[in-house]
Length: 210
View (cartoon, rainbow, N blue to C red):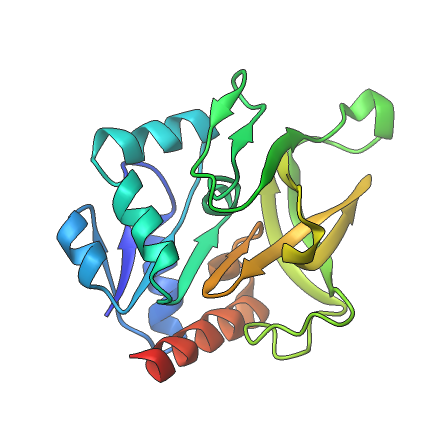
């Protein structure tokens, strides 16, 4: 069973529908016991970093998420769900994150500095990092267009966790991963066939591990 974590914010139904389109059933829940017993966990996110973390904390979901990430079971973060994996964010002042991966979430430079609108919204290309193959990308990240909506991006302290990058004024981490934990800054459920292929690959990994 794939569990999508419900903490009061996020693209829950669209993430669920994306997984279903990819051929995998998923359940939306805020029940810590269901998260603990799941074959895989998906942490989606839309909105402000601090509010999302508070949604997890107030529902008693921080420790279940940390346990899931440490369990060896497939784990996928989406958008703010990627950002929450890091230690802290500059959004809304300095806000605490889950600390699963080392690093900080920072804001894109203002448009007057780069000429680029913030938030970064729409289709953009991702490129895999040479020498870091990723099962979810099936070696086909280069030139793949996916859909982004974000004003902040992760700046990992450990560059080895970066699996794919994107350019928007700066090069930023579009996908990160370590062990069983994967996360994408873009929305695979909104990225048509390219994104559904990623969700399909994640589901395939879940089946192998179950």
